[in-house]
Image (tube, rainbow, N blue to C red; front, top):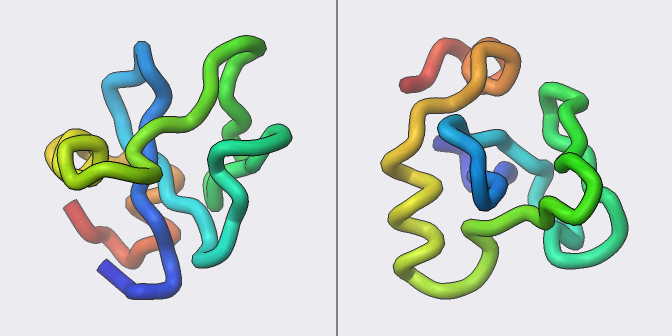
Length: 73
């Protein structure tokens, strides 16, 4: 994966999404590359600990993020 993107997921999501490097995924209402925003009261995860990173890395990307990543995973 490009080091210019961060893979994140939502608490009840089954797919990961990609955010541009430097996006404040813990604040406000960030938008993934696929333009999907988290649902109300559904904050992004996969943004801090190694366990969160591993969780996000294990999930398949949504189709739009996969396309944006050039077919990765």
